[in-house]
Length: 200
Image 1 (cartoon, rainbow, N blue to C red):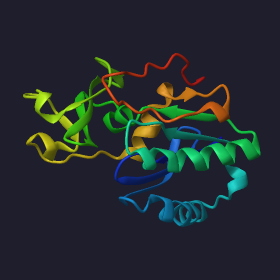
Image 2: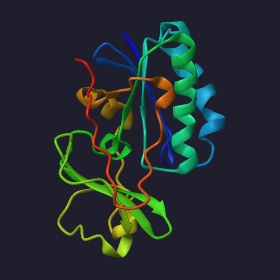
Image 3: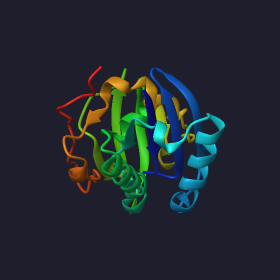
């Protein structure tokens, strides 16, 4: 079982290839506003280096946001077209959870307009609703910050995002209809709570 993982929801271009329960290849580079240009070349390079072709892909998992309005759609559009053409399953994962992985931390990412997307996680579970709030409203003293820490007076801290895709396999949410997969945008403090998890 080969799973293609992609995240373009923030400043990163992340591509991962998982064979069963092993990450066999990954690409993770900052690629702000160039993900659409770099996604296909880097995907081809990665698949070639792993001895795979597009015919080997059995399913795709992508981040659904919150994140860049345009960025979230890049990987999502590619995944939806590919899965539609091949009749393959597609799974989604919160971008904030993806960045947290299994770590106990608060994720903070830039939402523009002096706002951040944020949520606290523990062992792959959200402790409150994901939200978009003004930076000045965020009190994160004493918390381990992952993401754009510089926005709240900490260092930027980014994980191995491709590895987190694998570590969070039980949190993948399967789409019942590939055509109905849509980005998650937190314009206010709304949350997204998945109700169907990946079939182990």
